Length: 410
Image (cartoon, rainbow, N blue to C red; front, side, top):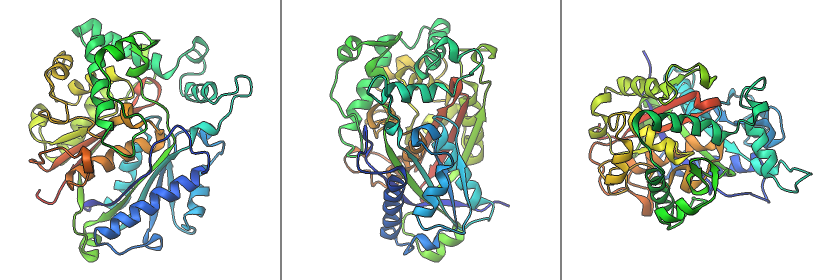
């Protein structure tokens, strides 16, 4: 029998283009310190010595310029002689890290587990160009198949755009204008999030006029790569009671799935089945109905690395039927004051994408919303007391993870 697991502490550093004055382990320290402070505001009264295990989300050794970077964080945080596990699943690293930390506590291995993600991508310097960008892109491209895809120039944008274009061929959506609405929404939501890297008040025309990255993705359809760290402290139900935590947020459902990493092998290029299977598994665990999920949750923090992928996710996660995601964003359904707010934090497009930290940030943001503690970007109505976070990543977005959270009213 598994134990109930709660999020009792949340720490998120600002997302920035680059931290010139910090190492990756110093960024991890900052998020951990914030999470411990938040847990103590929540009544826990704990310090780092009380943490029994750690799960680290770090996508890319080349970003950190350090193989096995987790052990250096472990030592810097003063967690020697305790177990730690590292997760690396591309853009889904954060979501899978939350899943593993949940498993640590639910299994009984730990009563208090630190879930920490960090990325320091812009220290990898390209000598030829004098910038970090080509080296960062090359590091990401190494996640593609190195035998056939990488030599043809596969990058993150071209990987995602193939799925979006195939979806458009089948359903006629998302259109370029519908994708632009996602960018307008998420950049706008980020204005009220002090941790966000890319807050902007923009129009559909601004997005449409920004330069092409990989057709039909334009510059403002794409997230920025970021440096940041995010941490959660997870506790068993027994520990929550012992510590007398005031506002625990319970993880009631966890789902994950991996699909074929070779995009051309997939039965249906326009549907990301890892999203569908992960969502159905998480909803089933939480006792929710996939076909009625929109009416059972209050908000969703989605993995919007590219605007078109967010539109497809509306459909794959069960918010609307297939082919209707574009119409839903046109109707205002996922706006912060719409029927189901999506990415009220600004998401990846508004906040930035510090890969190992991103899914942990989105889970923490969803938990803050359920605590009604999200500041100026708090959604107006928490009626069902439930939220989800969503992570995808890897070659062709082969990995997907969904986390369902509930507040005490459930």
